[in-house]
Image (cartoon, rainbow, N blue to C red; front, side):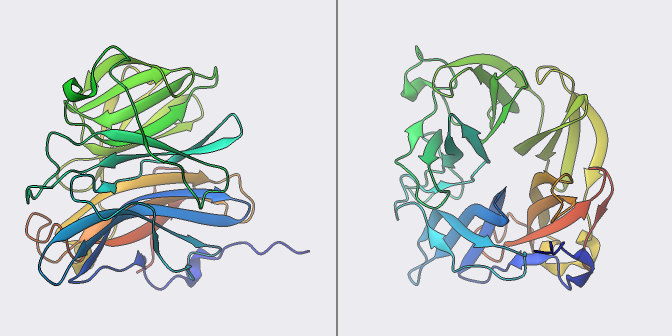
Amino acid sequence: MMLTKMDFENFRSPILLRGDAHTAYRDPAVFYHDGTFYFYFTKVETEADGKIFLYLGMTTSRDLHNFTPVCKLSPRDQSLNFSSPGNVVRHQGKFYLCCQTYCRENGEKYGNANSRIWLRESSDLLHWGEPQLMHVKGDEVPSEQMGRMIDPYLIQKPDGEWFCFFKQNGVSFSRSRDLLHWEFCGSIECGENVCVVKDGAVYRMWHSPHNGIGEMISHDLLHWRDTGKLITLGQEYWPWAQGRLTAGFVLDLRNIEAVGKALLFFHGTGPEDEEVIFDQYACIGFAWSDDLQNWQFAR
């Protein structure tokens, strides 16, 4: 059977999921398995009475052109609002998805102090077990003393040690051998929605400042240096992203013959600033690269 390689020149729009006045698509996290892209994201719904609910949503695609119907992986509950999937990893034969709760039960615009990070387990990437609280401050720290934390991301070092990055005091990070018991390591000044990829001898971290996608590099996941780069792609041409371009997620598939590129997923809001239309009109878009530094996108 002849392999069909993705032709990125065929894309006529950078938008994969388009939001509107009632729905927003935010915080993409994508996993590639057996020729299928598994998309996880925040789905925000504004109901007829103006109440807003966040969900952990998902869809799948074989080609990034055609997608299965979006489904919800979490309940309708403003005191939870499961959302912001960080990434999917494999551990001991299972898939694990980290995510957050973004608690807004009192009508808050942003997640309150009850927001925490969670881990879910699956054997097929479609059906997920009940969320388990991640005790990234250590088993001895009660959940009520962990503080507000959102936007988790997991990465495993070659020696098997796991790191979890999450938004708190800049970006904080902890390490573990089993994804259950964690040792808190510290914090660095950084934006939100962290994504980390190993690139040869270095780790590249993408994060979200006020606008755009920033980059930091490290050799050990503990000490980080800001490269000064800010990725904004085609924001100046895209009314749908001129309010804010953010939440970059990099999926490095350069070694996968059917794809052959690193993919950068993100969400954009516009034309008004995201502070004005935080819960509406967000769209998920993407770009691609051969080297993790120079990005191309559909015009």
